[in-house]
Every structure is written in C-alpha cells, then in structure tokens.
Length: 308
Image 1 (cartoon, rainbow, N blue to C red):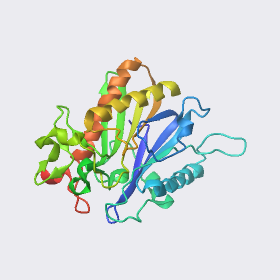
Image 2: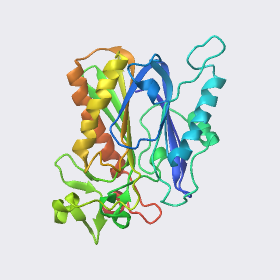
Image 3: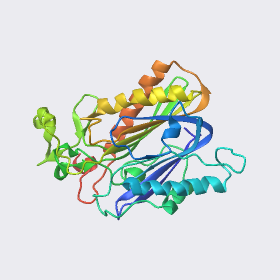
Image 4: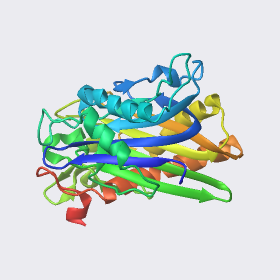
C-alpha cells in the first residue's frame, strides 16, 4: 500500500527497536485493546467518541513504557514538515503509540530514543517491509506460558491481502504468552523443549496455570485499508480483527497480555463491513504467522528459522 510509509530502528546488540508508520494526509484511525495491560500513548484520541478523527503516524516500539518517550522523535520529524492537526497557532502531530515489553532479552536498560524514532522516520519507504528481528519486533518473544526457559523468538510480520478492488496491509509485532498456530491449528512456534513443542505432546498442558516468568507481553497489530471508512467503522474492525489473534495464538488475550489492534483507512474504495472484517481477520492471522516464520535466534533464544 504505497500511500503509507514504514521505517524501522533496529538494535540487535542491545535487543530493542521501534517501527513507525507514516500516514498520508487525511488518514482516519481507531483502535481496540483487548489485553489487560496495554502500554499506549494518545490512545484515548482513537475512541470513536473523541473529536480528532485523523492521525499523522503510528508508532510501535520496544522498551516497555520507557520506549513511549521515543514517539517525540516522530512528532519532531512531522513538525519539521508542518504536518499535524491544525490549530490556531501551529499544527500538532497526532502520533498514537504502543509498546511491547522486550527488556529481558539482552539489555534491561535498552529502549529506543527519540533520535532513533526520528531516524526510523527518515528511512521510511513503501511496503513491503523486512520482517522478523527488525524494528519493534527485534526482541519480541513467544511461547512463555511454560516459562521463559522454553520461549522462542517472535518478531515483526507483514502481510498484504488483495480482494478485487480492496487492499489491506497488516503489520504485527508478536510478543505473546501463547504459541503461534498455523492455519490447520498445529503449533508453528512457541513453548519449545528438548527438540519439540510442549503442547504437541499434550495440548492440555496449556490449561495448567501459566508460568510466564515475566508477566508483560503484547501483540500489536496495525491494519491499513484503501477504503473510505468512518472512525466508528474502524473501531468496529479493530475489535473484530482480534479474532485473528484468537485463531492464531493459543492461549490468547490472557491476563499477561496487552494486545492492541489499530485500524487506519486512506482511500476511496467501499466494501461491505462484514467482508472487510473477514479480510482483516485473515490479514491479521497471516501477518502473525509471517512474524514467526522470519524470526531468528537472538540472545540465545531460538527462532523458527533455526529449527525448520
């Protein structure tokens, strides 16, 4: 989707990163959080009951709450270009942001800075984007329900879905407690021990009280539509698209997860809302699968590429 631009900052030595999606003018947006502990900035503005309908960028980052400060770099980049919500005195860039908790992978003191986010903006380009250990997905991990000693690498995934005149792009940052399933319901990546996926031996193990080791996990999804959609419709799509997480991650939306889905629209196409919902769910699923397919070892945590 050429109208949106994506850029990354990646620090593989310290284990963190961030991703920015620069939006074309008049991009409407909304979001829905189903996780119990989301880490966000400017999230309230995305409610369909709030005045501001359009955003200028979306910022996804590692570093837990520390990483949210880096969104200031995106605001600086946009402000220098006179981009933002028009007020009497000056444009105010609208940059919603969300974080994942990636601190334990390499350096507990590593998190993106505003300068890192600024550089991500400068590097932004049209889709598709590199995947795996990049940007906000650099130090993402999955399969922590059985303990951190069994976790695998998550990452950043991208998927574009075209159906007739409709185009949907999905970017996911996969940092989940649960396992990732393929479309047949088999474990693709997740809690892994002694050369096998733990849940493949007995799926009922997942029903035991989880032992995540650290209880801060998040899946972030950004959906982009080439359709003319209202803020209320985008809110509805964000809520329904969480079914893509439920179908692909098991267990999903636990009390250890802070999952958020953002939906953005820019374009003139129209489509039935139920059709868009199913397409959004599919794009969400596929982007999550892409994230783990491209994940590689980092900090001694194996990725799917290392065992397939």
